[in-house]
Image (cartoon, rainbow, N blue to C red):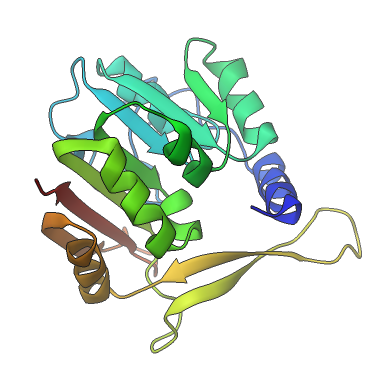
Length: 223
């Protein structure tokens, strides 16, 4: 991963507001697959988490990771941004958060996980040809891989795209990272080809008054 990519994620992380102290239901931890607070499915997508080893790729400031741990998972979070990792450790000192590129962690870790998740994280910003074999190798047979991000912004514009991040300094040049955009059907094919079964891919409709839904993909490691 390029140094500029790390800087871009630090810029993005520094500009993001922290997660609220509680959600609308009054819970201090909660899981959001979508970009809309308190909307869409929760951690049950990942199956029974109690005592299970779970990996959050691109965990950001740790909100979803904290909820996995609160639900009894033996969870690890990985994020490339030192700013985001520092936020996670400050708010939830008990979390196991690693500052490392997702593909580097997967390639060097000997851990085996029951579930791997990525919410607007590494699954969107890493070439699936590189990431999916590493994810599959890190999952136990029958383990679940699930990720979410925005649907493709432009019809017919698929594959690697440029994602712009604007530094807060006036007049600063924008920073760019790559993301990988595919329609649900194509994601289904990609996961099946990578050794996943029971693959589902759908766009969760946005809440009333919003225009952009959330793509949610889930697969089970075969064999």
